[in-house]
Image 1 (cartoon, helix red, strand yellow):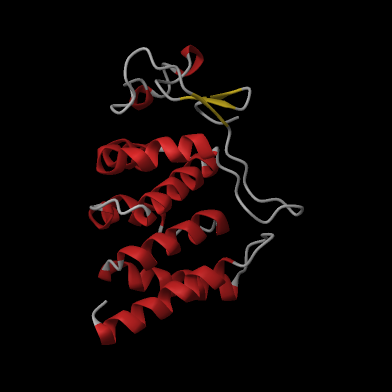
Image 2 (tube, helix red, strand yellow; image 1 turned 45 degrees about the vertical axis):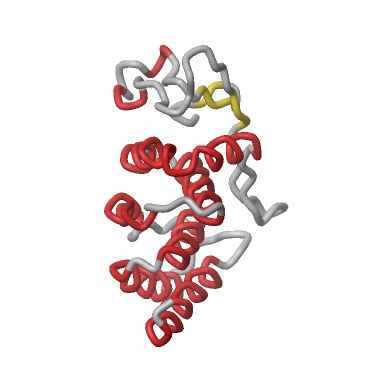
Length: 181
Protein backbone atom coordinates (compact mmCIF):
# COMPACT_ATOMS: atom_id res chain seq x y z
CA UNK A 1 0.00 0.00 0.00
CA UNK A 2 1.29 3.43 -0.91
CA UNK A 3 2.11 5.59 2.08
CA UNK A 4 -0.33 8.32 1.04
CA UNK A 5 -2.92 6.38 -0.91
CA UNK A 6 -6.28 5.05 0.19
CA UNK A 7 -8.32 2.95 -2.21
CA UNK A 8 -6.07 4.03 -5.08
CA UNK A 9 -6.81 7.74 -4.58
CA UNK A 10 -4.18 10.28 -3.54
CA UNK A 11 -5.00 12.86 -0.94
CA UNK A 12 -2.91 15.87 -1.90
CA UNK A 13 -3.34 17.90 1.31
CA UNK A 14 -1.76 15.56 3.83
CA UNK A 15 -1.34 11.97 4.85
CA UNK A 16 -4.40 10.09 6.10
CA UNK A 17 -4.91 9.88 9.88
CA UNK A 18 -3.67 6.30 9.94
CA UNK A 19 -0.16 7.47 8.91
CA UNK A 20 0.14 10.65 10.97
CA UNK A 21 2.70 9.25 13.39
CA UNK A 22 4.92 7.61 10.77
CA UNK A 23 4.98 10.26 8.06
CA UNK A 24 5.25 13.65 9.73
CA UNK A 25 6.82 15.25 6.64
CA UNK A 26 3.61 14.58 4.71
CA UNK A 27 1.43 16.44 7.21
CA UNK A 28 2.06 19.92 5.86
CA UNK A 29 -0.36 21.12 3.21
CA UNK A 30 0.77 21.35 -0.37
CA UNK A 31 1.81 25.00 -0.78
CA UNK A 32 0.17 25.26 -4.19
CA UNK A 33 -3.23 23.90 -3.17
CA UNK A 34 -5.59 26.52 -1.78
CA UNK A 35 -7.47 25.77 1.42
CA UNK A 36 -10.86 24.39 0.53
CA UNK A 37 -9.72 22.74 -2.69
CA UNK A 38 -10.41 19.04 -2.43
CA UNK A 39 -8.42 17.41 -5.20
CA UNK A 40 -8.23 13.65 -5.41
CA UNK A 41 -6.28 11.88 -8.12
CA UNK A 42 -6.16 8.29 -9.28
CA UNK A 43 -3.21 6.26 -8.21
CA UNK A 44 -0.16 5.98 -10.51
CA UNK A 45 0.03 2.66 -12.35
CA UNK A 46 3.48 1.31 -13.19
CA UNK A 47 4.12 -0.69 -16.38
CA UNK A 48 3.08 -4.33 -16.51
CA UNK A 49 3.70 -7.15 -18.97
CA UNK A 50 0.48 -6.10 -20.75
CA UNK A 51 1.21 -2.34 -20.69
CA UNK A 52 4.73 -0.96 -21.19
CA UNK A 53 4.00 2.57 -20.00
CA UNK A 54 3.25 4.35 -16.73
CA UNK A 55 -0.23 5.73 -16.20
CA UNK A 56 -0.37 9.02 -14.29
CA UNK A 57 -3.62 10.93 -13.77
CA UNK A 58 -3.57 13.58 -16.54
CA UNK A 59 -5.48 16.04 -14.35
CA UNK A 60 -2.81 15.83 -11.67
CA UNK A 61 -0.05 16.31 -14.25
CA UNK A 62 -1.88 19.26 -15.80
CA UNK A 63 -2.40 20.88 -12.40
CA UNK A 64 1.25 20.68 -11.34
CA UNK A 65 2.62 21.59 -14.78
CA UNK A 66 0.48 24.74 -14.77
CA UNK A 67 2.06 25.80 -11.47
CA UNK A 68 5.52 25.89 -13.10
CA UNK A 69 8.27 27.07 -10.69
CA UNK A 70 5.79 27.38 -7.80
CA UNK A 71 5.43 23.59 -7.73
CA UNK A 72 9.16 22.84 -7.53
CA UNK A 73 9.48 23.07 -3.71
CA UNK A 74 6.63 20.57 -3.30
CA UNK A 75 8.03 18.24 -5.98
CA UNK A 76 11.46 18.51 -4.35
CA UNK A 77 10.01 17.64 -0.94
CA UNK A 78 8.26 14.54 -2.28
CA UNK A 79 11.47 13.37 -3.97
CA UNK A 80 13.54 14.00 -0.83
CA UNK A 81 11.30 11.95 1.43
CA UNK A 82 9.55 9.26 -0.59
CA UNK A 83 10.84 5.71 -0.85
CA UNK A 84 7.77 4.51 -2.74
CA UNK A 85 8.58 3.56 -6.34
CA UNK A 86 5.13 4.50 -7.65
CA UNK A 87 5.18 7.91 -5.99
CA UNK A 88 8.75 8.67 -7.12
CA UNK A 89 8.03 7.53 -10.69
CA UNK A 90 4.89 9.65 -10.82
CA UNK A 91 6.71 12.70 -9.44
CA UNK A 92 9.57 12.29 -11.92
CA UNK A 93 7.02 12.02 -14.73
CA UNK A 94 5.38 15.27 -13.59
CA UNK A 95 8.81 16.93 -13.35
CA UNK A 96 9.63 15.75 -16.88
CA UNK A 97 6.39 17.28 -18.21
CA UNK A 98 7.17 20.50 -16.31
CA UNK A 99 10.52 20.73 -18.13
CA UNK A 100 8.71 20.23 -21.45
CA UNK A 101 6.41 23.10 -20.47
CA UNK A 102 9.35 25.46 -19.90
CA UNK A 103 9.67 25.34 -16.11
CA UNK A 104 13.03 26.84 -15.10
CA UNK A 105 15.23 25.76 -12.21
CA UNK A 106 14.87 21.98 -12.46
CA UNK A 107 18.64 21.70 -12.93
CA UNK A 108 19.05 23.10 -9.40
CA UNK A 109 17.22 20.02 -8.10
CA UNK A 110 20.15 17.74 -9.01
CA UNK A 111 21.16 17.19 -5.35
CA UNK A 112 17.69 15.76 -4.70
CA UNK A 113 17.48 13.84 -7.97
CA UNK A 114 20.93 12.32 -7.41
CA UNK A 115 19.42 10.39 -4.50
CA UNK A 116 18.09 7.98 -7.15
CA UNK A 117 21.32 7.61 -9.16
CA UNK A 118 21.95 4.12 -7.74
CA UNK A 119 18.41 2.82 -8.13
CA UNK A 120 17.81 -0.49 -9.80
CA UNK A 121 14.23 0.44 -10.70
CA UNK A 122 13.86 0.60 -14.50
CA UNK A 123 10.90 2.97 -14.04
CA UNK A 124 12.85 5.51 -12.00
CA UNK A 125 15.96 5.12 -14.19
CA UNK A 126 13.99 5.89 -17.34
CA UNK A 127 12.42 9.12 -16.08
CA UNK A 128 15.63 10.19 -14.34
CA UNK A 129 17.58 9.74 -17.59
CA UNK A 130 14.95 11.78 -19.45
CA UNK A 131 15.25 14.61 -16.92
CA UNK A 132 19.06 14.51 -17.06
CA UNK A 133 18.91 14.57 -20.86
CA UNK A 134 16.84 17.76 -20.78
CA UNK A 135 18.66 19.57 -17.95
CA UNK A 136 22.23 18.62 -18.99
CA UNK A 137 23.60 18.84 -15.44
CA UNK A 138 27.30 17.92 -15.85
CA UNK A 139 27.40 15.85 -12.65
CA UNK A 140 24.71 13.51 -14.00
CA UNK A 141 26.82 12.10 -16.85
CA UNK A 142 28.79 9.65 -14.68
CA UNK A 143 25.69 8.20 -12.99
CA UNK A 144 24.07 7.69 -16.40
CA UNK A 145 27.09 5.69 -17.61
CA UNK A 146 27.02 3.71 -14.36
CA UNK A 147 23.31 2.91 -14.85
CA UNK A 148 23.96 1.73 -18.41
CA UNK A 149 26.81 -0.56 -17.33
CA UNK A 150 24.89 -1.81 -14.28
CA UNK A 151 21.87 -2.68 -16.45
CA UNK A 152 24.04 -4.39 -19.06
CA UNK A 153 25.69 -6.61 -16.45
CA UNK A 154 22.60 -7.27 -14.33
CA UNK A 155 19.40 -6.37 -16.22
CA UNK A 156 16.24 -5.96 -14.15
CA UNK A 157 13.00 -7.49 -15.43
CA UNK A 158 10.85 -4.84 -17.10
CA UNK A 159 8.33 -4.70 -19.97
CA UNK A 160 10.59 -2.10 -21.66
CA UNK A 161 14.32 -1.39 -21.97
CA UNK A 162 15.46 1.50 -19.74
CA UNK A 163 18.82 1.46 -21.51
CA UNK A 164 17.20 3.09 -24.55
CA UNK A 165 16.49 6.26 -22.56
CA UNK A 166 19.75 6.07 -20.61
CA UNK A 167 21.79 5.61 -23.79
CA UNK A 168 19.88 8.43 -25.48
CA UNK A 169 20.67 10.73 -22.57
CA UNK A 170 24.37 9.82 -22.75
CA UNK A 171 24.41 10.52 -26.50
CA UNK A 172 22.71 13.87 -25.90
CA UNK A 173 25.41 14.79 -23.36
CA UNK A 174 28.16 13.89 -25.85
CA UNK A 175 26.43 15.84 -28.63
CA UNK A 176 26.00 18.90 -26.42
CA UNK A 177 29.59 18.87 -25.17
CA UNK A 178 30.78 19.57 -28.70
CA UNK A 179 28.07 22.09 -29.57
CA UNK A 180 27.44 23.68 -26.16
CA UNK A 181 23.68 23.05 -26.31
